[in-house]
Image (cartoon, rainbow over all chains, first blue to last red; front, side, top):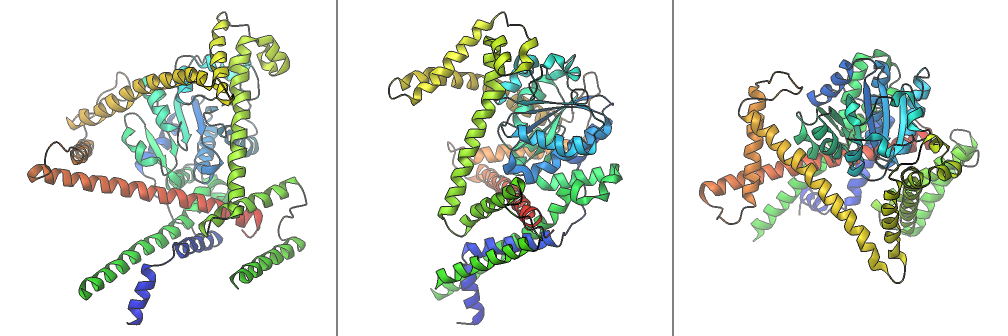
Length: 293
Length: 265
């Protein structure tokens, strides 16, 4: 038996843990060397960016953060980018969460982005945290007609009537845009089904890569744009860099998705190599067995 | 022998970490609460990743801890964000404001406050599952939850998924895209017409693959084989996106380990 065939045989029955190790090494190496690649924004991502850009100052944007730390590496860059763009444009931000841990994601964005980078913005006048509500799509169905039926206080326990930016909002039809960040159920699909489509409210958002194929059919009539996974987040950051050059100055802080796309690309190359090599090895062994018979 | 190698490796890692901490190159776990948190998070991350090698007690500890903490957090959040303001606050506003939420003080009692006794009763019925006898009473509450959810979802699916999707695809196949804003002009687009036509053919061919009342031969067989290709492309897209999602999570954890824990980035 030749050395090549012995190698092919070994490869054919390779323990999957070697593949895990190879992907791990690829990711660690690319992360250490900070590999980045240029991103070309796709029309679906650009549609969201353009929509936010064209909203008049003072427009109301509902930001439901329906995710938790489990999907933070994928979705946090999107959430940060949405909030930064809204803050730059002078839009009023209304945070809510249908996931219990979404509440802490909202608090994280407020502390990290709004309080640190935009200290001039005032809580209750420029942004408000309405907190978490359980009930999934039931919550959306109720606030489509009466927001104050469920939201009697904000997340800090302040009466909703005492919050200046809540004046004149009877239900979510009063919002100019819904920008959702979604990790599953309830998430962007439910916002489209229960708010965007019946309420005719412009709806868009970012989601985990796993969800993306299920949400594409809603584009463009029911969902004006979609950001699927870290790749789309990187595209959005590229647009932010183009529109607001100051964000290019500190990549580690403002362009986290772009920096994460380097290891992502290297890991994909490693996986593609294993898929191709595995199939080639399988075919070679199959033909050898066929010839032996 | 294998066990000695593993213990040797572990000892080496601990030694390197201790030297780095002593040299001030990375955060000490005993310096402050944040330092301890970072070390504990790093330990949990490695514990979860260790499952890739084999199932082990450290992995199971991390898994059980995650499930327990998540459930407890969920319960506490549900109590403070929903039960207190939306149930207790409606039934006994002044009492709730005095003891739980000062923000509710300015709110008058709802004239139909007694209606909230129904969800309170259903909530209590749900807890009867925990009793040794009378667990069947919880079915009333469950039946209500199931019925309401089914009703809500049926309408939403009919409006947004069935009607909305059919309209979005078929209207533009006819060469016309309705205006997105009220009073606006409709748009004609060859490109969209083409892609919607592709979508219609793809859906019909995929559905034909699951139609077993007719033999998959001749033109129908060829059409259903096209459906297999459509399904394969869909699964491939799903797989690709899943890989991207999982790798993104891995990158996130690697960044945490290298930057926040080891301080090498």
